[in-house]
Image (cartoon, rainbow, N blue to C red):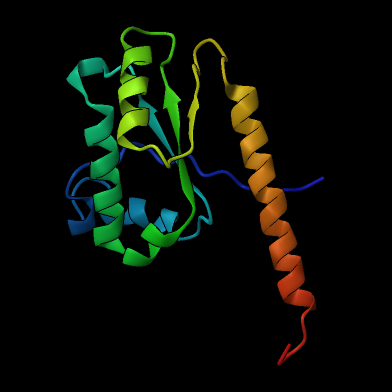
Length: 140
């Protein structure tokens, strides 16, 4: 049994690093997170581009605090129940071949088990690392 806290941060807008929108209040919450999961609209609803959204999110985080860019992260590709999410996902995977991407549909519950599995796996690995670090004495 492991305990974890998940912070659901609302949409980040361009310029947040300059304190626009929720700005620093929003970004300050991210500094406490050890893992970042970017939930992207893979269907491209409202004329959005998943690639542009990810690039914008990563840029805002890096501009706010470059150390955050070094944290582990992956993408939850949401709205896979809508068209053209499948096509957009294929293009997204080609663009970011090394990136961990979990296709999900929050509406239909598809992929949520895989998302949970990945989060649990990361939490277990992180717990082992922290336990090893805390058991090592000074100078070890």
